[in-house]
Image: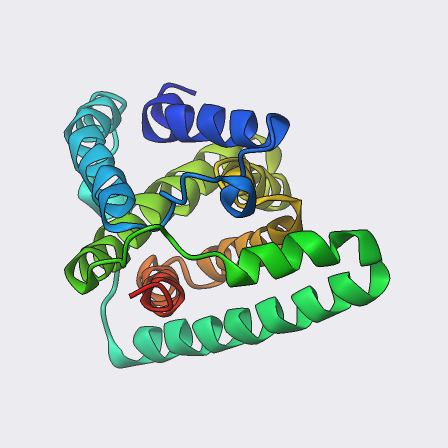
Length: 216
């Protein structure tokens, strides 16, 4: 719990509050989300948290070998394919949501038409697409899944991982939840199957980069 609290505690709290008080991305009149300052805030927050998390994990007996990250051609290809699948799934899920739940059409339209108040820096996009995927996947899959699986099994571990991942993305609104659940399940099962963080990081990095590139 301490690791999750340090890594995502403020993000989860902020996301829940955004959802409860109608301040999700599409509803935020200040239009700060995904802007340069917003991205740098995410980057700085994760870089500041990283040493504390490393200390907590080290004290708990975790070492680098406990976070397998085999960088090779096959793992990279798997990550690219996972990204392509996720991108396609996002498009399909959005279309299905609009058809099934007409009440969500306004939220989805607002989400797709959203732009930050100021143009997003390409440098910030590059940095966020490198740092954020590593930070998230190391903790939400590399740490959470093994810890939970030891006591409750892999299926429960993956579900807990998905719950945590989804909780700090609530600021994107209800319409984005099906995608984050599906993506979290894919990432979790991929980690359990290959025991390698690299495909997850590649998939996440590409997803972040191309999504954020839209705002540059």
